[in-house]
Structure formats: structure tokens, C-alpha cells
Length: 282
Image 1 (tube, rainbow, N blue to C red):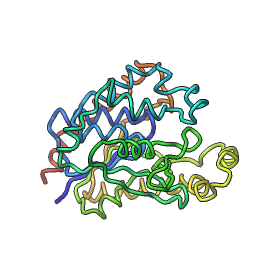
Image 2 (cartoon, rainbow, N blue to C red):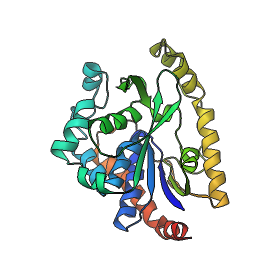
Image 3 (cartoon, rainbow, N blue to C red):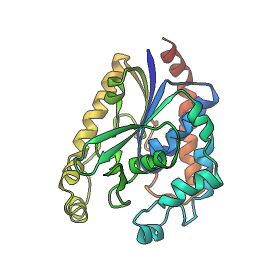
């Protein structure tokens, strides 16, 4: 049997998942593979590199640094989260990403991105943490309007959450049959219709397939969430949710607010620890 960890995105809601993951890492919870979407990818890669604490550390350190996330970056580069600093400077110079451990750890690590031309999900396994892998992480987290498409191997990609927010079905198709899913919305959440679709359509002029995906995203997401809940009830997956809405913005510059969400994740991780151990051992 293969155990998997599925990580939902949600921008700064991902700090909840980081808290859960850090508790798991500190208690030697191992998985055969993990797959992350958007923030679930950019934060989840630290599971393979075995670096508990790194996510909350660098987010707090650079919370107010315009090189990390700022409207200045958006206006000058087209990316709210600065592509070069976040993916090619900070992890190699300031808060070092452990490439050796990432490469040596046999756990598979996958990310989800959305092909801009087809608006279909693309699943990519990252093995080395090199420049191209970092670009795949960036693609997975490149939200339309807040980021420019990422060109890789002659195609353009954007945020994986546009096409597959909860890739449990994909991981099951890869032979993962014991899956822990960390979600960033509380149990019972139903995704509403996206607001400001008219503005989105104007800003995505010429990208009709992507817009169609976003227009129907609430239905796609709610269907995937229903599937996760069903597999959880059947005992074929174990779903972990925040106890309440995280109530955190897409952009956060307050380190104490980041710590609050992270601590909610740690509390949930500690509360779920025995259940996860029992599930993976069964």
C-alpha cells in the first residue's frame, strides 16, 4: 500500500497546512508521496526536504519586505509574489532550501498546474529542486491576474487550483490508496460563485478556456470536496480540516496574523496525530 499526502492551496490559508505538516514532521510521520496545489505546493515541498518551521519562518521574516509580496512587484513584474526573489533568491541565499535532503528523500513530490491553452490540469513530479522545479512550483501558485503565466517546455501554465484544487482522484490513480488530505476550509464549507466574474473576463481577454474554468470553478471544487468527504466516510482517505474558518486574507503583512493561522494548524495537527498514525498503520 502507498500512503499519500494531499495539500490544498488557498494562499495564506496554507499556513494552517504548514502547522499541521510541522507537527507531523516532528513526530516522524512519513508518506510515500505528496501532492500540492498552489500554496500547498510551495509550502508542501518542505515536507520532502524535511524542514519543519521553515515556512512560517520565512513568511514572517519577509512579511513586510516588498521584494517578497507587494503591489510594487505586481506593477513592475506582473507578479504579486516576486518571481525571482521568492523562487530563485530567497531559497538559495537567505532561508536555504535543503536540496540534498529533497533529492535523497525517496518520498515523491508532485505539483498541479493548469495548462493555459487547454485549461486542463497538468501533474508534475519534482525530483531535484533545481531551477525548473522551482518554476513548476511558481506555475502551481501563479493565480490569474495576480501573476503572469509561467512558460515551461514551450507551454504556459498557471495556478493548479484553476483546474484541480483537490487532486485526491489523481493520486489514487497513481496507486496511492492511503491518503491524508489537509484542507484549508472548515468542514461543511461550500464554495460560492466567484465574485467579479465580469472584471475577470475582461482581464482574461482571449483566454476563453481558462475563464470558462474559473466561471465553473465553484461547481468543480464542490464536487471534488464531496468526493473527499465520501472517501473519508468510507475510510479510504482521512480528511483534516480547520475547526473554524481561518479568516485570513490573500495577502498578509502582519507576522502575528501569520503565526495565528500557523498555530491553528499546529493545534489541529496535534489533535489529529494519533488518528493519523492509526490510519496509516492499519
